Length: 117
Length: 112
Image (cartoon, rainbow over the protein chains, first blue to last red):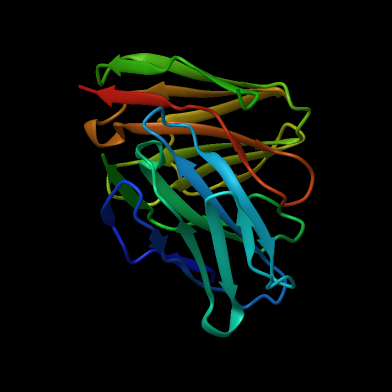
């Protein structure tokens, strides 16, 4: 069965610091998708990124970057020069796909990030 | 604006009340979901509807009753809830395949 672990429950940083959120996953499938979602205080989960299991290239989007390493089953998320608006709960998720799409989505417990001014 | 709208945003109800949560998506997606988010617990999948047909019920108590009249609307009917049912209830939709879930802002439910 698939599982997603986010060992960091809460992180506090001061504005402009870099911060890395860890995500470790377990799956027996060779084809799967990994996701990061952001949940601001408004409640809605906002999609940030999706990576498939065959693409280990790291990705950068502005101040956000993701490091996917199959060898360690990790998909870590780094925010560079953090801002107060980055304060939110961040969820890592795994989907094994297949015909029952969506039903195989598994979310990690989330990491609450507080960026202090 | 994600295209998934949930109402109401907040709901307070007694244990003997009956209420309904509503979710509407204008994204043309074929699948819709109910998730429960409790404090300090991972997101829990409750129900999945594909093409209006329920395909998943993760051992949810019968006091939660979903309804999907069409592929754009999803309801969660609530009756005789318990205080431990207090949580954020999130609706999501997705297109064919497992690309990604689009979430609404949720309904914060408090059961007194």
